Amino acid sequence: MTAFVILPGIDGSDGVHWQSRWEQSWGDRAVRIVPASWSEPELDDWVAATQRAYDDARDRDDDVVLVAHSLGCWTAAAWLAAGGSATAALLVAPPDTQHPTFPDRAGTFRAVPTQPLPCRSLLVASTDDPYCTAERATTFADAWKADCHLVDRAGHINSASDLGDWPLGRQLLEGLLANVP
Image 1 (cartoon, one colour):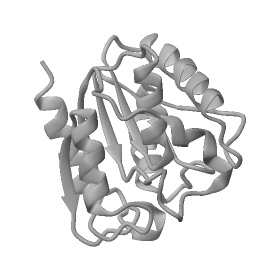
Image 2 (cartoon, rainbow, N blue to C red):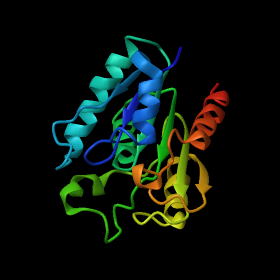
Image 3 (spheres, helix red, strand yellow):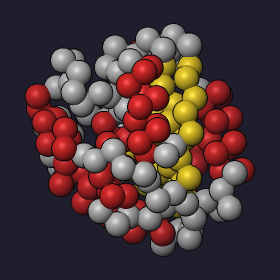
Image 4 (cartoon, helix red, strand yellow):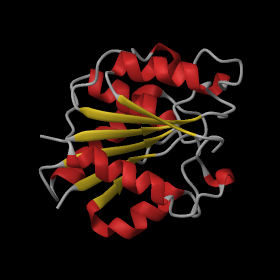
């Protein structure tokens, strides 16, 4: 069975966030990154936390899928660019690191490259995300060579979006995994 590495955004994903719900449903097949700097994110710390989570997940299964939200998308991109390897990556609501709303406290993430990812990837973004326009999200998907799916008016696709278990997201993840060689 596939193992999953959960990469939340700043401050982690609370208990009602779709990521936390999925993690709970996957049980011991899911491993959440645990950086020391949840509130004052440092890229190197988050990438190292991703490697630890990946190593833990690999102990459970050879197939490891990254499930990233918000700043976690940039963490996944940085980890993969540094030589990380995954079966696939679901990248949900990456913030625009050049947008005025991008927090200064996450400034180290501004330098993450937008280069092709070495695994099958799907970027999911909302048409009204306050942290990234649909056009910029599409640009990121193109640069990462990721498929792109735009969701109509779902905000930042987080707890405030009131998505519950987010069934559409599960369907998109299943579709991504069905197309992995």
